[in-house]
Image (cartoon, rainbow, N blue to C red; front, side, top):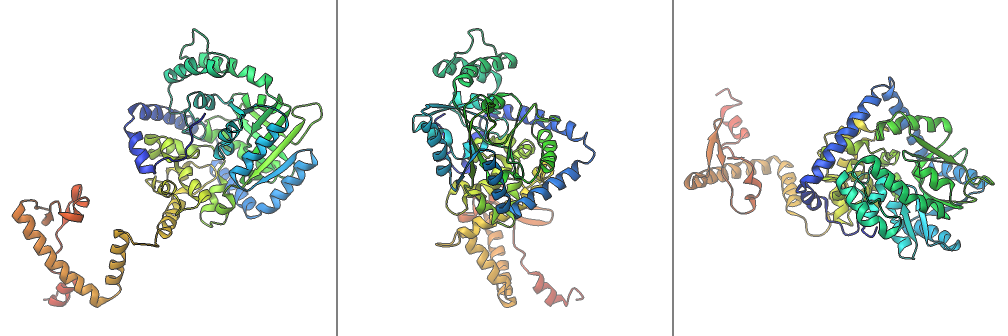
Length: 496
């Protein structure tokens, strides 16, 4: 895959293009509706679902407040079991570790488990620049990679593709990088999965280095955990001689008891299943069984920045279930590409600005506004991330970040309003001027025929100049000829 999110336009521009794609909207509506229905059914079976959400949020918050201690404990546990631990402050450092391990073993290809962290650091592109091919083995990721596409969903990266499109991608692209698709391939899901399995099998059998992420990392035992539905993860984690796992530092939990809470919440919230078909756990090196060299890269890449944000740090609770995407009315109509990141949807709208910071990039600054603030994401989140509150706080941060330099018209208007409301005398002068302006505008609209009356009020038509765009789709009431304060003074509070 050679495409990246670098250089993507701001959300409003990208969303406008996505909304024009009727096939995309149809694919998204069908997929998200199906996932929502499955999730609702299995969540309803759990009597104490809300208690589990509260417990999960408390576990995560406690870990985040003592993250330094738990990370040191995790490193000690992993090292004691034969793993080599690397610390990566940036995406470049994390990618460099993986590339160095691959070069040390003289390989020109690696197989990968689906991993948001490796997508975040653009590991595939970094390895490709050094002549190392990274093969995605998750079915949806394979579709995206073969189609030279970009992922558009956290759980189902190819959610924007339908079966006919997937069949065409397999027929046209599989032969270019390995075993070709069967000559009689149809768009039946079973046949498509069979074609992917045959194509990937040869890559699994010859790969010497595997790359993974981790859904969770248990500090007490030094155990990494990957949950998945297809079995490709199990192949990547057991067949290669060397395994490199890139793990975000927020993925730590303290104990196996804590892990149990999340293994109940995650499959129900993500795939609508009671449990994951495959849950793989490993702790360092086991002689004679599985990879005999294990590296773990603990990734920061902006996470400590997010941790320092008292409102936004709750985003680090995220377990990447994608429940917020599946209920979001904005995501359902625009898809994930419009967000310009591997983290799309409501969680992406807060996580990307938190990790990268605001005030530096127009695309990132646009994301907190990619929401209707309806609150459906908070209701669906299994770890109770209050996404709407974080969005509002990030919007304030974006505004504050742009206060320097020449003020925008909106800022000038707000300052003028603050000055007027800060003094009774100034407010009275503004009210008198408003009355005079209202009579003048009403007379003008009457002369041009643009004004009208409704509900006893005179409504001004489309205004000229700066007010034209605002009044294209709004009715602007004419300011009253007399202000409330003037009326009160004239009538002694309505008694005369």
